[in-house]
Length: 94
Image 1 (cartoon, one colour):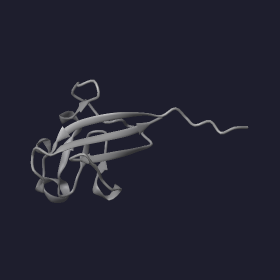
Image 2 (cartoon, one colour):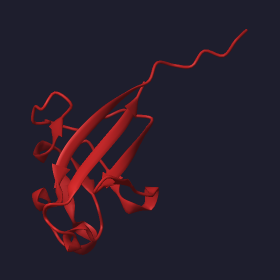
Image 3 (cartoon, helix red, strand yellow):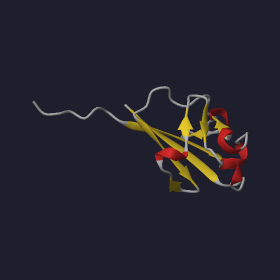
């Protein structure tokens, strides 16, 4: 029997560093400060996903750079970045 790959899709969210709060290890950006692919303000990040990718200024980051919940993404030390730095979070969902 052949292996069937499950359906996968992505959900992308865009914001900038200036939308974050906190300092150092507690710096986080709330999901409600992001816009989704439709250009609408997000209410939450997906609760179930296979994995996510974080892009800071267009460069994909390693897994140790952030952690995510349905309400926010935490980027330790992100407060040291310029406020205009774009942030994209891409969730791969099934």
